[in-house]
Structure formats: C-alpha cells, structure tokens
Length: 103
Image 1 (tube, rainbow, N blue to C red):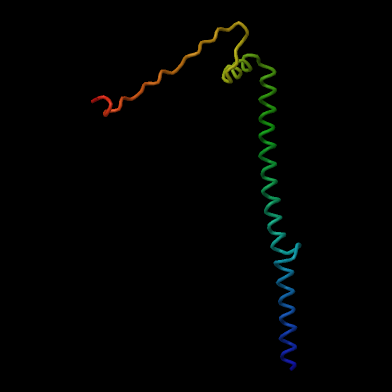
Image 2: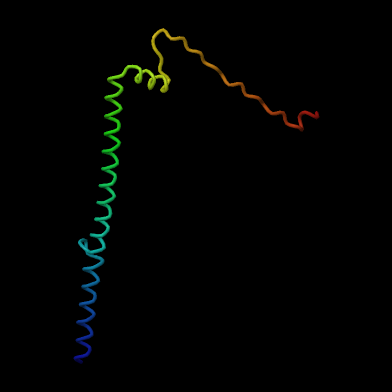
C-alpha cells in the first residue's frame, strides 16, 4: 500500500515538473522562444537603423548637389520641363512556324 502511495506521489511530482517546464505560459521552452524572437527583432531593428542612416545620408547629398539629384531623377525616368522625349517601340519579330510555311 505504501509503495502505491509513493508511486502516485512520484507521478504527481513528475507531472507537475513536466507542466512547469514545458506546458506553462512561463515555461522554460516559452522563455527560450521569446528570447530568440527578441534577438531576431533586435537584429531587424539594427538593420533598419542602418538603412535609415544610409537614406538620411543620401537625402542630405541630394539636397546639397543638384547634379547628383538630376542624375538620380533621370535614372527614375524623370525629365526637365522643355526636354524632348523620344519613345521607341520594340519591334517584335514573329517566328514562322515550319508547318504554315510549307502550306
């Protein structure tokens, strides 16, 4: 009888430990996942800060130098007032099918 009680107590203790370690909201597994997510988010933040700094530097450069601004605008397809624009259409060559050629 005592052995059954000990066995039941051990089972209850093991079940509680499993619950605390793995299933509870504040479990070690949940904390590990949250720490990993935090590290990933901090890396994303650092990448975005670097990108923002590069854009700020580019913005300052474009405000200071009109030639660079014009070059960038031309790459984006913009033009000055009074510029003439020439549009070229691509000529599409159709392949002749060998079956229709023989007919």
